[in-house]
Image (tube, rainbow, N blue to C red; front, side, top):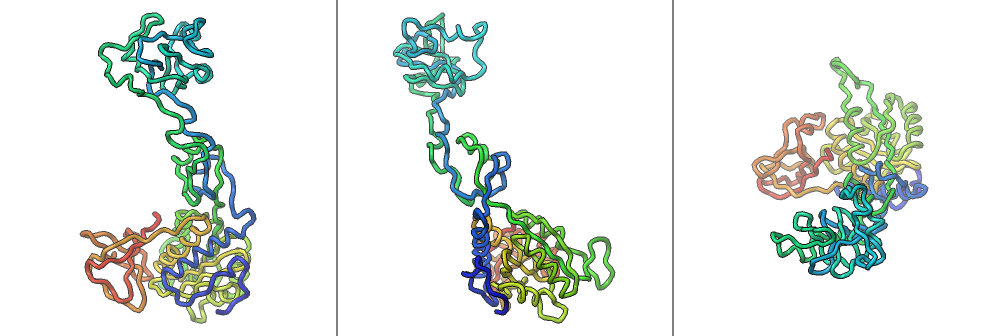
Length: 434
């Protein structure tokens, strides 16, 4: 294929012409990974946990402590040693020693504690026949054999007994949360490539972490072409409404990237090339729309071929056939066709795979599906906007490459091989990221 010498980061990516769906997707994913690895520091940053949700873990993350990090009580009541009755004692080097004082002496006006007292209880070792008050979440003293719930304990001064109506299981080592029941110290608690949720952030906090290494968010530029495109109002005949500036940025975001620049390119080869060079110097991915066919009015295709090492030159797929994907210096380029459905299908397929590679994730998987009706074959595989119906998948209405209504109603992109599908035949579907 024509074009400049491949950038170092893309040198291992063998170009494909009329690329099949999976082969093109694999190349885009490998390109994203290779470009990220070529960045200083591997495109990794450290973020505090309150900014971690939605980011992608760059490495396996290990617990800094066991969770929970101490044995604690699951109930308000008394930690006891042995079968009872027990003498209630205060914390000390060995609870139950002759000079032991009642825990109540340490509390204002003898009030029950409103929170655990870890500094006191952690020094306690219960002797046989002794007990100490504990609260939910409080430290379990060494020597504890069970925790008696408050409602099943009868206390008279320092004497503690089990209530007559208490269940027999109350002495069976219950109501103790051992240290490390959720995870051990140094156990891997988050795998590289995990998209971090608020729950991940919370668990990393209780596992002793203050921050987490994440992949840098890929920076994306959109270069929209077409002098016939109008951004608002009702276009006159011969003009069309912009369908990309409001749809592609949220698609980028759904795959973990960030659109930092949206520019409209002129239908003039030299000016368009200058703008492309400017954008390719500052972003991880430049996405163009339109101009990828082979007419004299299509300026994007020759520009990409001259400026980029073309990795994918057209897809063996409809819609989205005239798509190009390549490498230009320190950025990747995804040149989408101008038809809205073709462009969006190609972005879901290749743009999503590239961004997944950048972030150390696997591409969004295809899911098993069954054709809900007979579907004719075509000269290439088709990815059709489709929805579930009566246990199968059927194409939506309005799914021409120049249409968007079908995609708006779709639950996924249904793969129809070139030989077609019989009703009930198995195939696959690509769920969208929204």
